[in-house]
Length: 111
Image (cartoon, rainbow, N blue to C red; front, side, top):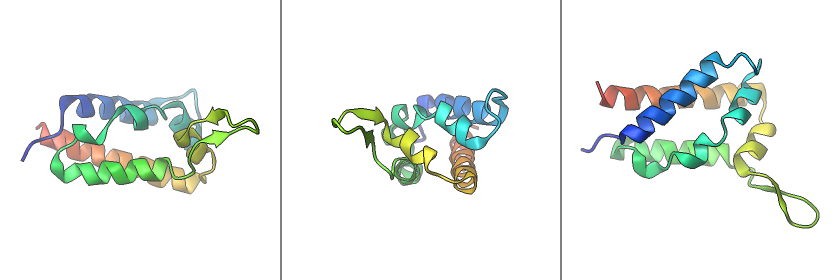
């Protein structure tokens, strides 16, 4: 079985570090919104076979609201930010815990 790509390991490590230590944003929702690009730059192909589906499901959760458009049809908020904006703090905590979980699993592949 192939292990996850080092890119996924590094980027998830940075994401987790920021979520745990970002003092600029006091609540999880703001922390998640500030780091929302990670859901777009870390592709499922960078994960081992055993973690690919877990990451895809996490991405689906983070994009379930879809993009937000204005009256003219222009995108005003990407799907991740739009979804996080509409999450409760409890839902944000659940999402963060899932991020921590998959990050730990990827880390174990490199030990």
